Amino acid sequence: MSNLVRGGQITLHSIRMFTQLIEPLTKWGAVVWVFITISLIS
Image 1 (cartoon, one colour):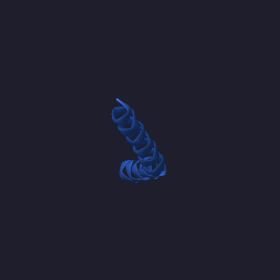
Image 2 (cartoon, helix red, strand yellow; image 1 turned 180 degrees about the vertical axis):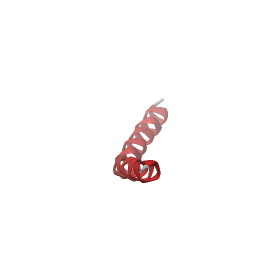
Image 3 (cartoon, rainbow, N blue to C red; image 1 turned 135 degrees about the vertical axis):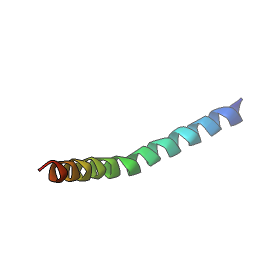
Image 4 (cartoon, helix red, strand yellow; image 1 turned 45 degrees about the vertical axis):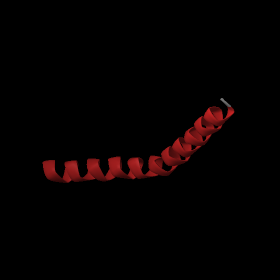
């Protein structure tokens, strides 16, 4: 049981670090996507 809990904590920690890494990338990706869309429309 303790091994399962420890594994879950490690998984949660890695997911949290992963989302922290991805968050700025998705923000920049959204900015770039909006910029491309506007330039295509105009």
